[in-house]
Structures are given as structure tokens and as C-alpha cells.
Length: 237
Length: 202
Image (cartoon, rainbow over all chains, first blue to last red; front, side, top):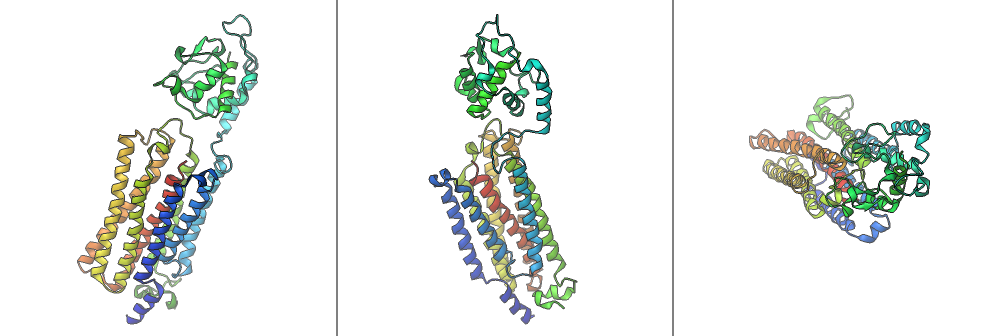
């Protein structure tokens, strides 16, 4: 009994050792929160790497000393490390798969969307302007505004079909207006804005600014995405 | 055989093929699999990051100073846990009971913080599980972590009562060590969540 007791003392840190580790962990956490408030690090894109290194240090502190992985049998370390490595690989692989690693915020283009795109572009009338002459509004070539095809992808990907119907797009809800003959409308946003490409782009980027309380959500689209979406809308027959 | 790797008397008595105690091996394999469990939830959060179509967004709801305090309480509870283990390894049952209670208290403090945070998000900020992708991935990840902390607190309190009835002596220090491993793991997961979900929210 006495022998094993002594062995324990050698294997595990003393209470004083534990307090030392706690102090280090405490200081790292203070540092983490402080780093969060340093604005220049954010601008330099250094926030994420610094925070990841600091939390890795905390991870090792708790795992190594509090969980005794540093002193215990190697097999325990192998069991846990295998789990941690698999976990990290899973997170990195999924983030890479969804484009979050290299191009964060880039739209996910699924196989389904791609098939819909091919099906839609197979129909010739989707590409050509609807009614160039005789309409109420002057004719604007959608291709001068942006990329119609990309706009169509954003239309599906951003979930516009949740509320709007549009010609040649499968499905579509009835909460917002049907966008057929879009280019021929005199106004948009329920009469609040004139139907010009610039007004449509501004409206898409921040609907609440022009019509507070509108059901149209802010879809956090970039300026280029708004242009492409507008081009798509103007191309609708 | 393999006694050099087995400081605990219980371990020495078992004669396993690895020379390691079964319960401890079980605990470590369980924790390895728990890593995968949380990895799936963290991946989900990371993949949905910034894809919510409507608010509230992370910037609208997350309160860093408040969560820093609950993070500190969880971190300090880990210290209480190792002090409890050190106490029972010295056969100091009184010390064990004090540190276990302190650890359970700090864990409960953390849970209270999370309860307050969730209530505030739902009632004041209008962020629910079904509001947007952020709400769904945030509540599932932090909710499962909170469940783990709750199980840990129950475990600690049952150990306290066992110790109070004199059922835990230096021979049973492995029981305290295993509860400690689970508790530290829950703390380690929070280290990752605090960084990924809270500090890197933008």
C-alpha cells in the first residue's frame, strides 16, 4: 500500500503542480479574450491563427497534466490522440468540401443546382430578351447588367424560390410576387422604387433600407451577386 | 507483469493483457469516440457559418464578456477536480468532498450561465433552433455540450454522496480519476467551442 502510494506521487503532479497549470490556463484564457478585442489583428487576418494556437495550448495543458496523458501509459494517449486526429481531419475535410477553407462564403453549387442550370439553359427563350419592342419600359440587355447564368444559380441557391415564382424555374412560393415579365414593370418593391437595374441591385442588397418592415429578407449578397441576380430578373420572359 | 505501468493497486490486481485497467481503457476509448461526436457538430457549425439568410446573426446575440466568465468557471472547475483527485490519493476524504462540491458548484454555475444565455437568445433576441442555420447549428452544438456538463455534475454529486457515506477511500481513487477524465474532456470541448463559436464568430 505504502509503495503504491509513493509511486502515485511520482506519477501524478502534486496539488502545487496542478495550481501552476491552472494559472497558465487562466492567463492563456485572458490572453484569448484580449486578442479578440485587438482590432489590427482582425484586419491582418491574424485573429484565427492566434486563437487556434492559444486554444491548442490550453487543450494540451488540460490533456497533458489534468488528464495525466503526459505521465500515464502511452496507450491512453494513442486512444485519445487517434480520436482527436480523426476529429480534426473530419472538420478540415468537411470545411474544404464545402469551400469554407479557401473561399469562405462562396455559394455551394450542388449537383442538383447544376442539373437545373443545364435544363434551364437548354430552353432557348431563357437566353433571349423577352419583348424588346412594344413594352412599357425601355429595353435593357440583361447581359449589360451582369451574368444571367450566375444570377440564375444565385436565385436558386439563395433560396429566392422560397417566396417567388419565376418562369422556367421549378417550384417557387407565393409569398412574394411572381417575377415573370420583370423587365416590363414600371416599379419594384411594391411601388417604392422605379424599375431600374441600379434600384433593383440596391433593393436586393438591403430591402429594409428602402421599405422598412418588408418581408423581403436581407440575403447578404455581394454587389456582383446583386448585379447577376438583376441580370437574371431582367432576362425573364 | 506490467506492474511498472500500473501504479494503482486495483490495476495491479487485474492482470489484463495490456496491463492497463479495463475501466480506464474503456474511459479513454469512450473519450476518443466523443471527439468524433463533437467533431460532427463542430463541422456542421463551421460549414453553415455565414450562410444564414436572415438574422439574428452571431454578432447580434453573442456576449463575449459574459461567456468569458462562464469559461473561467468551467476552467477553474477542472482545477477543483484534480485537487479532489490529489486529495483522495493522499487518503484525504474530507479534502475530496470539499473539492468535489466546489467542482460541482462551478459546473452548475457554468450551466446557469448557459441557461441564462439560451433564455436571452430565445426570448429577447428571437433566435430559436428553427430561426436560421446559425440558430440550428449553435443550439445543437452548445446544447449537447451543456448536456455533457449536466451529466458530469450528476456524476460529481453522486461521488460526493458516496464519499460522505465512507465508500470512497484511497483504494477507490480510480473512480474519482475516471470522473475527472470525463470532466476534463468536457472542459477541453468547451475550449474548442469557446474559440470556434464565440471568439471566431465573424
